[in-house]
Length: 361
Image 1 (cartoon, rainbow, N blue to C red):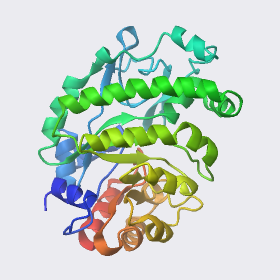
Image 2: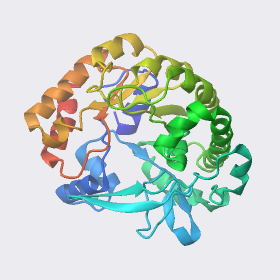
Image 3: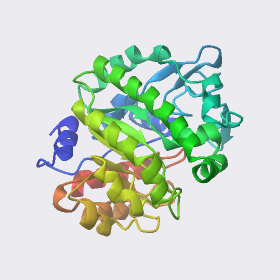
């Protein structure tokens, strides 16, 4: 089977010759893989590595004086001089060892503290500044060999970036009407952005990336009641929209998300990522037993400890356990790093992950 066919068959619960294997990585890891294989671009590296890559085809935004940034908030900035996200959140470059990150500065929506004041916020995205054409050109290249996912959209993550995490948590308790008014704008802007992208990339996209981290390393970040009030109806609307365009919903939340997995799936989510099994309640075998008939799992290979610091043999053992549990029956699982493989991760360990899936999946 081809990489694209293997992914699409898995998404549709059709028989596959083996479990698909994907990889998330930082730019530094991408550069290391290109150097290792002696190739010029990421797509060539994915082919050389033998990945069933779900290629990210996210959108860029022309911020004018603030630079060109990716619509994936805080990431994908092609312009090193970019100073704000498309939502107006200040960016600052952080060097951490071999890795470079764009981190968020002061929350720009502080001071706009009533629903009426939201009209005065100067940084609401203008959709005619979104670069759909470049994304579509990349989609057409990638879709020849790989499944393609895009755009990246979010509710709660963007809200927290705009208000700051601490104030966002306080808003949920003290100002639910304000939360609703702000989320209404966040939803409306991205809904229209998706519609425009779907029209331009018709027939070439396979999934849409909905990212809303609602859990941390030990517990939920938001109560189930608050999630149901503010986010559940919105997620359901987006799932309906995405499905109406013949696409699958890929939902990302890190952490100990177990109490909300069922309600999230009830909204219509097709793929759940990243299955961070080091967190409480995220036992792989239990998740497969409870939810495996309802969702495709994506991720699971630990990239906090095993991939960056383990031996190649430890990586192989980790992958085999993921295949034994989430991949039982060779269905409903796309094996992948649990999140972005970080700078300094040995290429040998990445090769071990992929080769183990090829051999045992």
